[in-house]
Amino acid sequence: MAPCCWSGTVANHGNPGMEEKIRELVSQNKTKEEIVDHFVGIYGERILAIPVARGFNLMVWLAPVIVLALGTFILVNYLKLHTKPQETIPIAEEKVPYDDLIEKELKEME
Image 1 (spheres, rainbow, N blue to C red):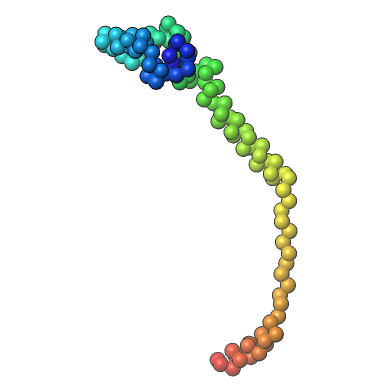
Image 2 (tube, rainbow, N blue to C red):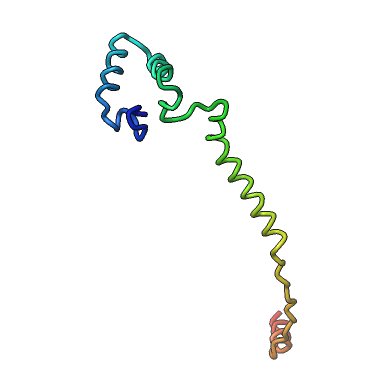
């Protein structure tokens, strides 16, 4: 994040001071991890656009999954308890008026 206003990343914000410092560290053959560690040492973890998944920051990653799972569980159980199964109505066998005649003709054909 850009430390001047904390509203965007350095790449999107266009902070010339930060960009120059990054270029300087790259020219010193520093790795990406070393550059990130340098800025975290100065500004703290707030400088990171994506929080590190450890300690309290782990909740940023786990909380949405836990809330979604808990909400789904509650919704499913609520629907199971508060919905009535539909009653099935037995269908009476209706006799077609010509059933006997059709059966008789079929037997005669054999």
